[in-house]
Image 1 (cartoon, rainbow, N blue to C red):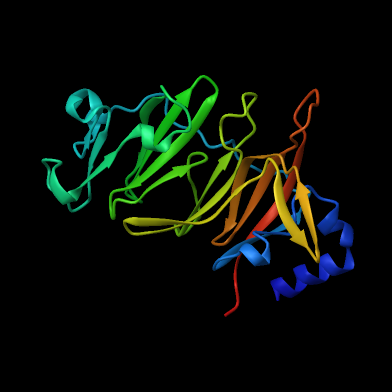
Image 2: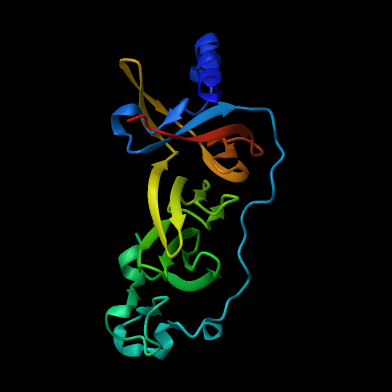
Length: 251
């Protein structure tokens, strides 16, 4: 019923789909996998603060972590024991995270940002001046992924979003990612940059400067509100707001 209602709104109000800074859905049909996102512009601005991280986290508080300072022979590589791994951090039960393999610039500061015990996920932060991105590691299956920002989990924990907002330097990624998550695993299902995105509407290819996602608020297990900043030279930030539904392609 909700999908039919959304389709009616888009058909009845073409300005809703074409006049906003986001396409009505993403990725476009030709590039979709199992899931896609459906955007509906909204006036609601009831959002929490942007996701934040602790000022400092000590790796010494987590016995399954061995930072480079304690492991100089590996050349700055972090060692992480899997959930069912051995405590000596050796062999097939250990994940090795090399900051250089997950950075687009050299000489970054790579540090532990947060541990999410309920999801068995470790978040690292990679920074240099205004450059900033994140690396997520699962202690369940050893999956490693580069993320745009800290995760924001859905109410049932089956999804999390990461966001990257505009930065003056342009070094950091600007966009939105959606990950599926479960007990000891995660998988990236949607990933797109929003600074300039090409998509297809009908027979015509279009480009949108979509700005950067700043904040989000989960509404239910598969719907969240999204706040986007305009990527324009203005005296102060201006925003667009959307309801975003996670949709699954029909078989």
